[in-house]
Length: 363
Image (cartoon, rainbow, N blue to C red; front, top):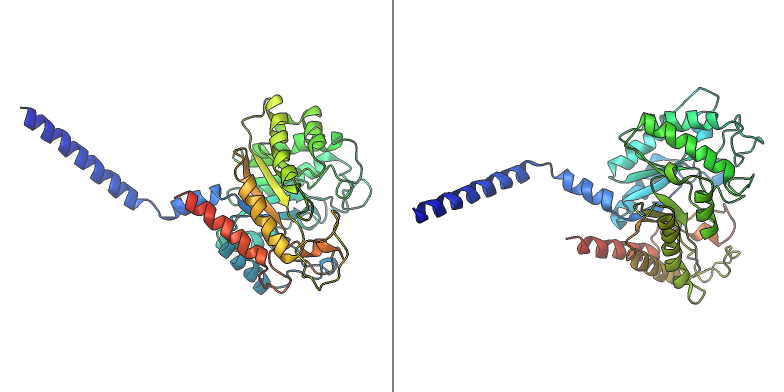
């Protein structure tokens, strides 16, 4: 009797194990890859939509876009942050044209890279002061464009950032302590969830530190973003700069927790520094002396090795993936992991090593 019961139990266990293995084998292999892509914390900011005279036609051909995306994927990039410009998508009120961005989204998806889309800046016809960096003269105009875009890309792009650096006069010219921006964020959030309940909304990346994080909450935006979005820049040339880099997200999380947002994650959607060849003569960037290419590579490792230890930091986007050409006329043109001609800098190798180390840790 005892033997019979034991045999029956063993048979049941074997049958269950076989069923599990067959079920596992029947599952699409890409489910595992998709899960890894979603979890991948490695992102880059890259201006894949740039094909204008003011940016030296950075991506004027499909061949250049392919080159960039192949290199991204080889380095381990899981996410690309890019603009979906209002002025191009809705050049006239009520007339939407998604063709350019449809092509980009399809190409990026082909290379199995996720998109964080930035909804920005003002369309010429809708700006309060007829400039791209003015807030819209009527929030509803922006909301209509945002909702239409989020709905159009439902299931293809589900992570959206509302404006870029709204706490900086360079990108939101009418500074008022984020009051008008937070009003806009609230309106967009409500509209976004109606057209795509599964989408995730990020506040526009904050450029001015902890004060801006506090202002976001002071202006009542708590319930109108799903992920806190901050930008952190420090110079590897300066001593103890890594301490400032590590401290900021921790302090930001304290503000979040104090406001009942301890369950949310932090994405750092811009961090980086120049990597300039020693012989290259170029004006310094805003934090002083330009780091060399080797200093940039060492900084990539410090940034990812340290920030990925923070349990509240979910994604980190290096700015940028590829150098620009005479756009800023400072060291900022050399933020890339690859040069303008697509040749790899030492920082590209450093980025890939960080990714490989992260991937091994997940096995």
